[in-house]
Amino acid sequence: MKKLAVAVFFMVAAVTYAQEKLTQNTIQGVLQGNQGQVVALAEAFSEEQYNWRPTEGVNSVAEALLHVAGGNYYLASKMGFAPPEDVDMMNLSKITGKENIIAALKKSNEFVLEKITLVEDDQFAEEVDFGFAKMNKLGGLLAIMEHNGEHKGQLIAYARSNGVTPPWSK
Image (cartoon, rainbow, N blue to C red; front, side, top):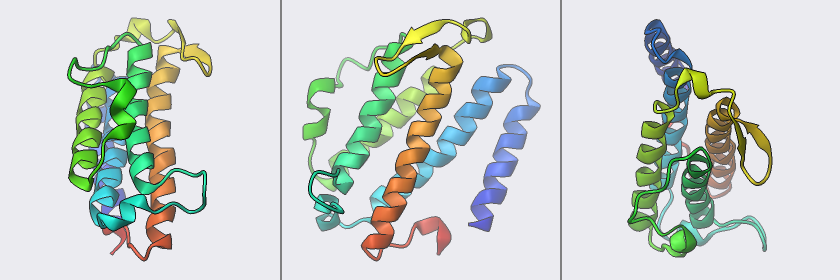
């Protein structure tokens, strides 16, 4: 955990040193750290554990991972960045198999990381209707970061409940 914190600190410090797109690069750096941990957790679960859920009516491991992927595309799309043509948003939740789910998650991560730096500083105050709230584009970028962090926490709890140690805390 200490190694990760130090790595994130240096990554954020390096990114913030560059003044161009300071906000976007900082958000991108923190998000990239969260995404890396979510992918590490996804890889740490066994194929069988992907169907595990803490109780009926709550997302399984697989559903939580696909929810993160869908959230990346959804939030970016509301800011004007359409998902890639080969991504079927209506059927994203139907993806099965550990390898396929991880691939879909990684693709959504790469997509959203790229789009963050396309938001210009003078666009931060533009209002966006996300469906669940109206906020500016800066708020949207922060929502992407927060959403990934929220579900990282959920997946940590799922991992601990299944005897899976998050790889960065071994």
